[in-house]
Length: 232
Image 1 (cartoon, rainbow, N blue to C red):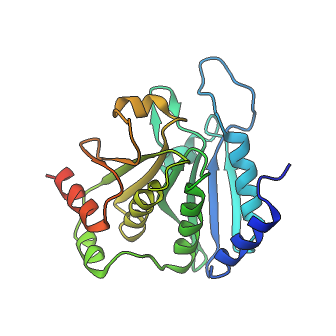
Image 2: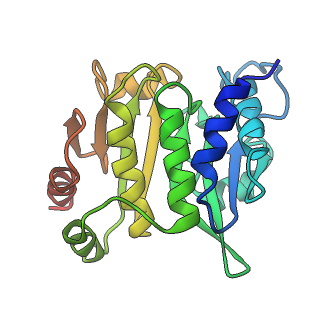
Image 3: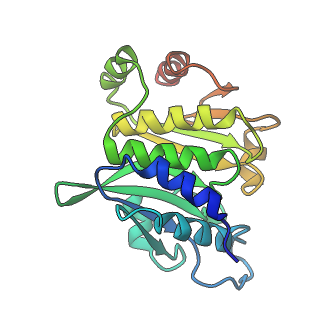
């Protein structure tokens, strides 16, 4: 059974009509749905595969590659797949863009199914990656360009949170304009151990370099201030 309704597909096609460069969605998810003792259970891997497959069919500039994190260790390391004490996190979605015949990876991630309100973030990401157009102010972009240190932004969300996409897209835009940034959406209910580690009782909650915590969806210039504090 299809996840997207025909009416949804038409609206998504309209959103993706502005795409210019090919974008590859790279999904890390186990090839088998069988749960092996001692390995991480993937709550929504099947649904994530189906959803992204349906999205990929809606534009000739979109493609989907599925990699098994339990087998594709070299690829997991190459892309920088996040892991914890239980191993690599999955489902995990990241992106590559065809930049003049060469595929370029952007450290923009969805850990967990990009559903609910976060589906809109997925579409915003695809358009941004394909067109190069983001929504950051010139002042924020200028300040981001001066950051040469590694910055990891973990944004904890739930699919039913209407304020979470703003926080996630901010982290994703930072990672788009500055390759030193990693922007991670982490679905709190799918990765409850990480959520418990950072005392995530409300969303969105952004953890920067495992040092500075920001609760709520703040304007980009305020998020940047928190990033600077994390680098002190």
